[in-house]
Amino acid sequence: MKSLVLVFGLLSVVFGARVDAGITLSIDGVENDIVVVLPANHDATKRYPAIFYYHGMSGIPNTRLINRTIETKGWILVGMAYQQRGAYKIDKASITKELQVLRKTMSQLDKYGLNRNRCYVGGFSKGGILVDTLLQADPNLAGGIIMGGGHVATYNP
Image (tube, rainbow, N blue to C red; front, side, top):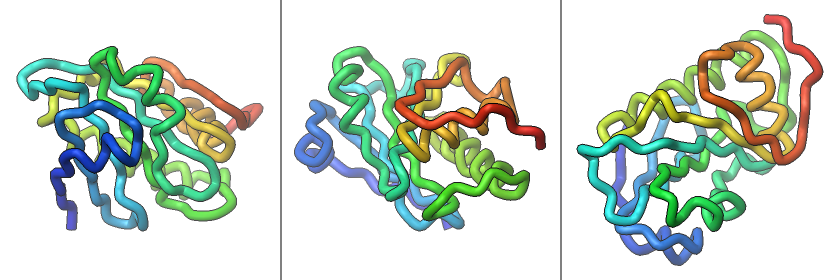
């Protein structure tokens, strides 16, 4: 069952961000919660660009690398969790499941002012491989990718 839990103050300690509010998202089939850092003075009636960031193989959402760059820019930052733990499989079933998790996450963030026309995905290591593959599978998924490591030459679904 999907659930939202409001988290105040704790995110500023854990992630080094100055935020008024943050949330965690639970998605069916994903072991770890997805961590969302909202802009300071967040207003759900406004539209915000977002970065959906996948950390390395641990699969534990970590937004610290990107947060310090965008914390004052008015962006939503999403620390994504993997549907598939451990080594990454590049096959149609795995990609389909990861795309579903990302789309469900986007849907849950619509009520927080997500600007669907300004969504970007990023990743490091396993996350870099994943975002490369996700955008090859669905080029319309996001406006671009940020790869901190990892690359798949081609993916043919």
